[in-house]
Image (cartoon, rainbow, N blue to C red; front, side):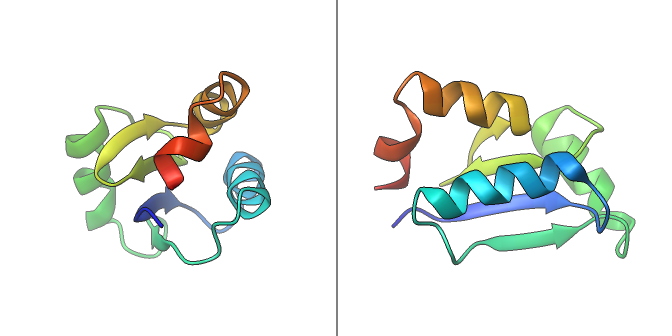
Length: 84
């Protein structure tokens, strides 16, 4: 299984949706980085992704993007192969 990392906050509906899709695809173990409880991680997230919003999702160090990007990747059939 691929290594998944998600930059997230406690109360983010888009984060919840992204995690739900990952769970549907069999991902139960992923690194969750809370930028609201560790503000230094926001700078790390922005440097890695070039974006300020959450979630920011990485699969095997490849930046996928946010929730909409993850769902688009899944609709195109690209998510499952990345997770394998």
